[in-house]
Image 1 (tube, rainbow, N blue to C red):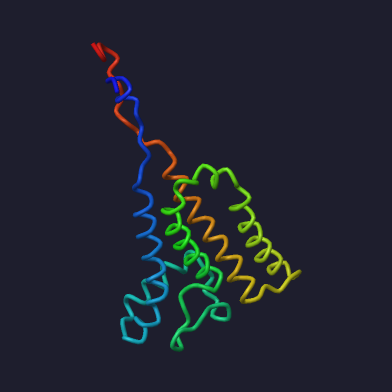
Image 2: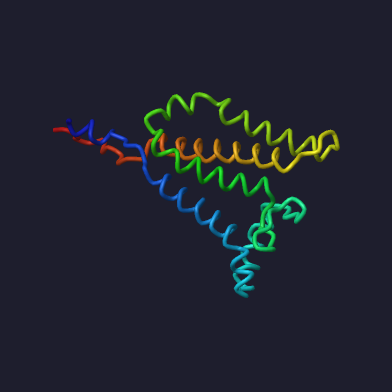
Amino acid sequence: MNQIAILHHRSRPRWPWPLLLAGSGICCAAILLFPWLVLQGEAGAALSIRHVFSHLCHQDPQRSLSLAGVFLPVCNRCLALYLGGFLGVLLAAPVRGRSAWLLGRRALLLGPLLLTGLDAGLDLAGVWNSTFWSRVVTGGLAGLGLGLYLTLFLESRPRAGPVPHRGNVGQ
């Protein structure tokens, strides 16, 4: 490979997968460890977790799972979104070879997002009463699609490489 080709070579970044996996794993762990923290008397840590997720979720106890008698800091739909997102990021590694095909099939992402929006929107409008299962299934599918697509999209973008010198490159 000549010098100009080396300078123009742009590799694909691999940083999104471990960062997104760690970030989504930490979110899921915080949600699922919340009841344990409450039961252990770790009020400061538990309140911090609840506060962080309060900006992202309505935290309605009637729509939240209870573990050991303690309601999770997110509703069922958000829990499914987080767990589905973690699974989507996890599955991105083995399907990297098909990323162009998957990224080209936007319906695989937009379909679950549309279903989640319809389930939530029709429930708010009083047209449809969303159920535990409708919230979990639509949230989980949306999270799976978002985690997978976000990871594959970020990994498919070229990494910025060195800018070639305009002078006597290759001489």
